[in-house]
Image (cartoon, rainbow, N blue to C red):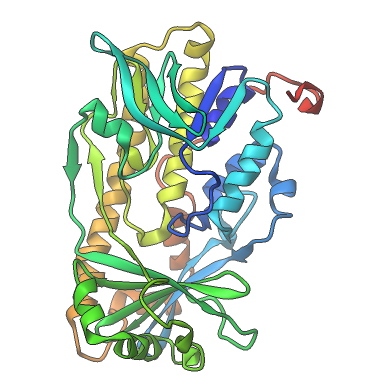
Length: 397
């Protein structure tokens, strides 16, 4: 959606295919980092965007046993928005859709599911899709697979995937929220259990971290035991865990960390999770995808205008975005293997490591993870131009 918006804004005709009737999906990430907010600022849309219901966090910390550890202070970032924003991704996508619809070059087709690639020789020249009106074919100078970790596009393209492994999975559910509840604490750690809670005003969106493949064992122990596990991490939910009446609203999110060895082939490019599935650690997946989209628009807008996108253009895009992807995934794997998986098997009293306690004593240290989380490695900035120098509403089709 973001790539389609940026290219259409630069005058490049784009067709975005979305297989569902809407964007409502609970597994989609909520975290909008300062790097993404900076892109929205550069688009001149930040004031309008922040009118949408959202939450803002300027300091990030974790509850480790009985101790609260402040980990990141975003108020010193060199960005216009010095906070993490929380907004359901379907609201974010609706906002981008509304902005993109102002450009006649942008075309969105809902309930259009891609089923296969159209190839001529070794070059991808389009896709076939099923729609409510029947089968269709869309031809394009470039097909971009932005269809997530289970990408149909990358599967049919035969691109090689390198798996980095993940020792954890996540159970995703919601519990109602009271105004008297504690403030936002992203991570809560007790012996053998980890719970991440996102404040969505009326309810908590909860991510209960489990060992890889352990969901069946948890279900065998029963719902009452699971409720007790939740209470042991967040005691203030004791009067509300009864809302979890069965397993149906508790969804398993299988964690994957992988990346394509090559993100492209003639006529085709993968970005976002289709090119590199990210761990939920740090909530950076959506932001890496947005950075991919900005870089893609920056690099390809001019070649598109000349109707010639070469392999060297696609190679340049992978070269630019692969380094931040590798660094971020390396950091995520370290956290998964050295901290999260260790805590899940430990039954000893949980205490914050000595180096984390330094963050309480020396506040300036909180600026380091703030930059890594909030801005990341090699942030992208908008370089494409808006083809309209005035309000585009007159051009709406």
